[in-house]
Length: 322
Picture 1 (cartoon, one colour):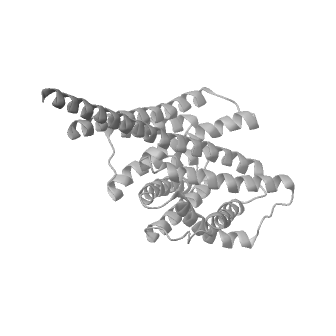
Picture 2: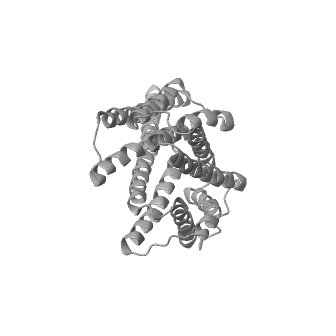
Picture 3: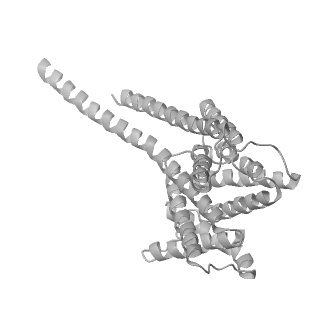
């Protein structure tokens, strides 16, 4: 009898160990999935920045935005629309609000760039992880710890150093830069909430729909159509890279908190700088190395913090079940 109980206990412990290992493996994969998806999206957004810069000044912001949103809408409907109604998502009102806030962030940023220096506008815009960290707990009850707040602060310091920040330009332009950061933070918070019951395609489809409606009147007023092969290639690259980057970002929010995903997305600045160095012969300064280190250090710190937290939760769950 004693031997039978001992054998049964050994078998149960073995099964528990297998479950624990499987649980740890899933947690580790989840901890890596979010950062990898976000960093890949950030890299593609940086490539997108390079393509927009290479397109030249003859194409207005409205032209670029319309091609991005309008062509994206057509492609998504062509690829995914034949299976089912692609607009049949959960919480349609919030999907529409996400499209509006995303467009508001884009237009506010464009306004800021036209009124104040580029570096000032980008630093103010990349305050959006801080806004996401502030808005997510207030609107969607998404908790944030002290360590996570420190990570956001470190990333923001890295952004400021990267751009040699100084508060210049008109007051209205500065306000628009902050407004762009606010709407971007609100947007990523909404995306995180929408990912609970909506796929990445549905979320981006509504963004493209609202973006097309908003940019169409200004585009039609004075459309700039590509006339040479290189322009067609660049515009096509902008459209397809936008789709891939947005879908990866939306999928990444399944594994990241809103502000955490925003923090990983700040690495776009580093990738953009690298592309500028390689393709446009821009000069490397100490600001690039220090700013890049702070941005990546914050990303590594938050990832390690989440991995440790997941491990503790796994041990707690295992001890409770045993």
